[in-house]
Structures are given as structure tokens and as C-alpha cells.
Length: 599
Image (cartoon, rainbow, N blue to C red):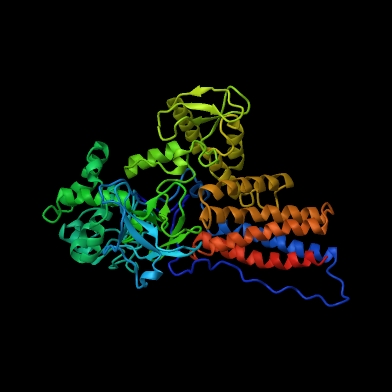
């Protein structure tokens, strides 16, 4: 499956060289106060508060100035996905020393994982020892990188979009494929427009043709995989060990015909390589990409990795991953403590979607039916992200009577259950219609998003994934959007941002627990309204210094956790920049907190 970003994402993978847990801030010494000297005055503390608020305001603009896309950040609409580990016919569970798995130069007792085989899961990774939160489990470079589903001109060297400014795009002098320019850093590189690829297209006479059709980009990644056979035999051997699920995919005529027309025939006929690659070989590579690739980078690219493809799926994963924006190397870390012998997992589906949608996605694109603890629980571990309000009673909620059966009826449940039943087809139609409406809402329009939530407040549970999607956008818009910058927000809107962030964090604590990107971003967003509401209350003499100190402690806790999580992201990524802003704000907050404690 395509594993990559989540939410979005999510998904980009970050910074290969960062040490796990490196965001933990060092303990600072207590401030010394001279004996007999008075502490800071209320006025002095208020002045310090103003500086802290200014810091919060500046921090609130960091994500926007770094280019954060609120549209991309919506959990129900985007996220990067990992590969699929569907059932296969392997031997019973046993530990193996798999020669196809890269484990670096670590001694056996230092290895983070071992490979197991299972009749149900195939090959998968389990913890070889107890793993700590933030600990690096896998850090590796891709076997192959290429376009995912590009439909616009795209440089095959560095993967930047080629803007259509009316002038002819620069084209490779040898094969004629469009590139960003003569000095492209990816021209001739193994991870970009390689010499093998250029030679193959030159031999096919592409240079004399016009620009490639948009659909031609969809065949590039498959060709790059096939070229590994001669150019990099060891990488080809590792790739060949990956599952393609051809036996399942052959039974999906629409998918098979699409690959035949867009990939197989283009490589064999248009690019004149029928004598090099058979139809079965190309279809197999298509399957390997569909099942095992990760979305990486920021421009619609995907990659295959020599070890990470073995990560099993769970709808509540115990790892987080990021990719380096320069070389696409992948780093997988423990999101929370993982005990020895436990499977090491990530999610191949959007974690903030409901069970019906997640299982549908996994079945159609990853070719297996998930039966994890979350999928088997109608309440989705108590989060209620699929729950609908009962139309017949004031306090009941509709939940699937058998969540592993997509056709099972939905019933009003809970302490106040009235027993109302709605068929699964009607539920699906209702949710799809609401989702289509949400897709038409401008993700940067605060009023439209609030209107959507108000319209469906009597239909969707407040934690329903469609409501969470709108709230996730609002959590970022309040404080950044035009007319809603942090200093422009009334106390009422600051409280709204605070309450939304707290609600999201409660859900993330269950569905994406630990050191995960969604939690880090949301905790960062939460600190600003907490700080400014506390500051305004203190300046208005509405709260005493003791209460102010207690409120500031919550701000410090948010920043500490946000800085710890986001420090694991690449420095140049939007999340990495946000993490640095959190660390800077944390230093100021600790100083002010000590000053308030001294009052």
C-alpha cells in the first residue's frame, strides 16, 4: 500500500539523522532570589506576560509562513499511506534471520526488530527488545523513488513541478524528457533521472517526440523498478521479495485493465521495451508498488524501502515515520513504548476515518480485511469517530451492530438506547453525502466550516471523523487566517480554539498515541489560546497569581510535549520549523513561569 504521510500528511518522513527523543528539554536551574529582596511586581510580571504573548503570536504565524497547507492537513481528506500486509500462505510463526532484510551494523542484542512469518500476516516485524518512545527502529534509504500519480509536468530529477509559463520546458538533451533545467541536481543520479533510464528512453527515440502525455508519468516508477534488474541487481533482488498479490489483482478487472493500458503497453510498445520486459513482469511490479510503496517528499513522489515494507498494519499504529526532504530516506520510530515480542505496526489507512471507510480502503487498495481491535469495536476504542446521533431519541447514538460486517444494521446504543435500527446502506449514503458537502467547503473559510458543524450537530457525534476533519482545520485557522490572527481573536474565539484543540488531543491520545505528528501539531496549537486567555485574565485582575501559575503550567506542558514530538521532524519541514518555534516559546514560558511563582 502506499504508506506515507497521514494525516498526512500525513505522512512525509523526516530527517534521517535525528536522534530519537532529542526534543526532551534539559532541566533548567531554579532562579535565585536574594534574601530580603522582593519578587517581581504585578506590573513587571504583566510586562513579561506581554512579551510572552508576542512570542505566542509570532509562533502562531510560523506554520503559515513556512507554507503549511491547511487543506492538506485535514485528517479525513489526506494522509500518506504505507504498504499493505495482506494474508499470505507462509509457514507458522517463527523467528527468522531474513537475508533480504537490512539491519545495518548492529550487533544481534542491539537490533530493534526481528522478522516473523505467519499464515495470516506473512512476514512482519516484531520488537527484538523493549523499545522506548522515540527510539529509531528503521532508518534507510529507498531502493527506488519516482512519481506517484502526476498529471502535470514534473521534473524527473528533483521532482519539482515544471510551471507552464508558456515557454517550452527544458528537456534532457539525450532522451528528451522534461527536466527543471540543465543544472538539475537529480539529473544522472540513481534516485532521480538516472543514466539507465535516460539510455532506455533515448533508445526508444523519445527525444524526437513532443512532450510526454500526462499519463506517461504513471509508468515511470514501474520502469525504474524494472531497470534495477540490470543496473542494481541487489536492489532488484530485495524488490522481488515484496508481495504483489497478482492472484487477487487479476480478479479486479478495472484495476488490471488500467495497469495494462497505462503502464504495460506504454513500457512495451510506446517505449519499445517488449524485448526486455514481459507483461507479467510489469504487472508484478505494478502490484509491488500498489502494495508496498510509501508516499514521500512534498511533490507527489513514492518510494520502495528494503525493510519498512515489512511493517504490519494496525488502525492504531505504534510507530510514526518521516522522510527526509532531500534524499527521501525513511526513519521509523516507536511512537510509544513497545514491549519485546510485540508486532511493530503502522497504519495503511487514514487513522481519523471511520471503520467503514478504513476497511473499504484496505480491501480495495491493500487487498485484505482488517480485524484489529479498533475495527472490531463499534465505538472505535471509545472515540465514537463513526457514531451518528439517533434521530428518534435525544441521547442515543447509532453504531454498527457488527463492525466487521459492512452490511450489518446500525442500532441506537448506550444507556439511553431506544432500539432504533438503520440499515448499513442508508448509513453509507448519509455519510457519503455529508462528506461530499464537506469536500466543497473551502478549508480556509472559518465561517463555512463552523456553519458545516452547526448544520450537522444533530446528525454527527461531536467526535465523528467528518466533524473532526472540520475541527482540525479550525484549530489551525483560528490564530492564522486573515481576520482571525491570534491578537484579533476575542476571548470567546480563543476559548473555541482551546476547546477544539483539547477535543482533538483527546481523540489523538487514543488513535495516534505517543510521539505522533498530529498530537505534536495540535498541542502546539493549544498553547497559544491557553497563554493568551491566562494573560488577559491576569491583566484584567480577574485571576490571581496562583491561578495564573497553574494555567501557565498547562502551557509549559503543551510546549514541552509539542517540542519533543516535532523535534523528530526534519529541520526544514513545516513541522520541524514549528517544533523549533515551540522550543523557543518554551524557554520564554519557563522564565515567565518562574517569575509568576515568585509573586
